[in-house]
Length: 355
Image 1 (cartoon, rainbow, N blue to C red):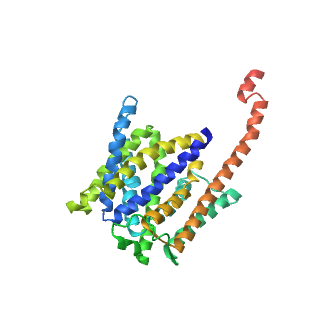
Image 2: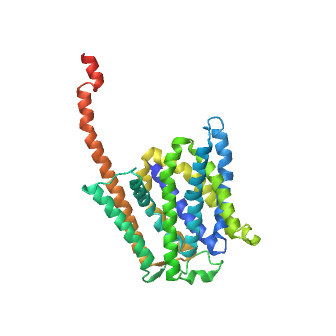
Image 3: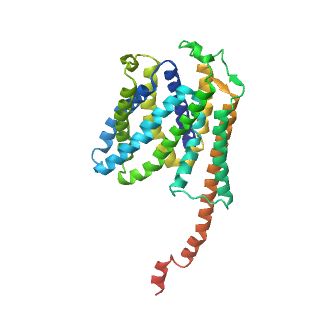
């Protein structure tokens, strides 16, 4: 039973993310403004995390200098506020399934940025290096297929969906080609800024090592930033109202469940099984989202989106496969040196003993 807990945890994590894409898309389709949604979501996350971080970190909180604060501010602005605002507009233009499909590009984009910043190396003369290049190429092909190849539309279980009381006519609307392409590239821009956040957050953690406080502070700063963005674009007071409806449910779910629950579960899975185990389950988000969108929302899916999603998943696994092979080779290369050191008594320590 203990061995199955990480598998159960990743199923919960990816199903939570599937619910995020689904509920966010529903909230936008019933008229909620995307910028207002991001503000409320981050405010809910801050209210959830702030008392927890104060309770656990009040005695061990590291010193926060002005320079570190500005780094965290910029990290929040580009990695959270800009990313969430962009993905909100992208979901408005496209679909929940597309959002879930393009989430498979995040590990590949992160790897690509790590190579540019010289945090990761690629040797194209080795088979693992060629696998990584092939994976990036497949992802590019997948994005191009989703953006430019529509194909026939698949209305999965259209007569069985449960949510049919909010703007039923939306179910039969298909975005125009220009709107769809714009949405795809906005989704990629969001993933790019999110990947930058993942890469640069590691450097900020060296200056401010408290993960919980760093997350809370970023949520607080992004709440202020997203409020200013929303106030600049949304002047109608009616757009800011939340009732006991799908809007409030979406905000509470994204702010508390997505930010709070998945933060803990992801940290636990990485500790138990490592980051690769978590990343290789990313395609589950797409599967769960398609099931949810089909049964509950009657979402229209194009054949081009399905084929593009398959290419994205294939590209993800090629990159991970190449990275795993490189790590195995590195371990194999260091093993003989370790054995030699043991044989001679541990290097310099052995020299001291022999003298």
